Length: 146
Ligand SMILES: [Fe+2]
Ligand SMILES: [Fe+2]
Image 1 (tube, rainbow, N blue to C red):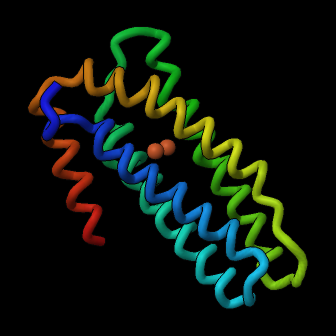
Image 2 (cartoon, protein in one colour; image 1 turned 135 degrees about the vertical axis):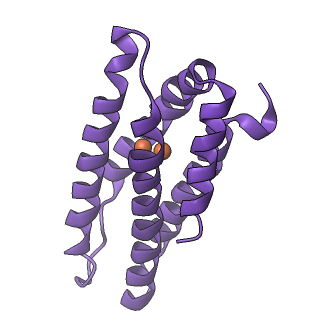
Image 3 (cartoon, rainbow, N blue to C red; image 1 turned 30 degrees about the vertical axis):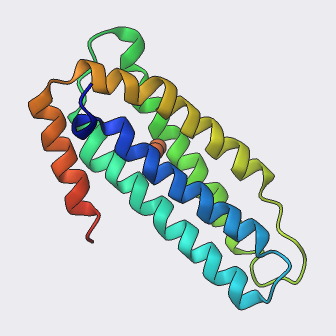
């Protein structure tokens, strides 16, 4: 697999960025509320940008070859929905002085990331031809500059 032509490689980088922002948010728990709100917003923005890229540039370009793979996109879309709901529910806790429990979000997000990195993206990189992959990568890069 050519380095420049791997969707997995690009998405791994993005996933790392998101996990780092979630860690920043988690460690800001004891700090002033502005810092907590800022780190929450930074995480949320990056996560939503990433989901939008996956949903509009990647999932829509994938036509699975077998029944098992056909189930992957609906599974991932459902998980995006559940993760967005969890992130939204944390927003209410931002203004309160107590700690915020992000353990559930962390677990769900890590499972989602693992499935994409170990199952979905490797299949995508194997099944799609080079031209289609390049066109997806072009779309991903366009969205980076929103
Ligand atoms: Fe995803
Ligand atoms: Fe992802």
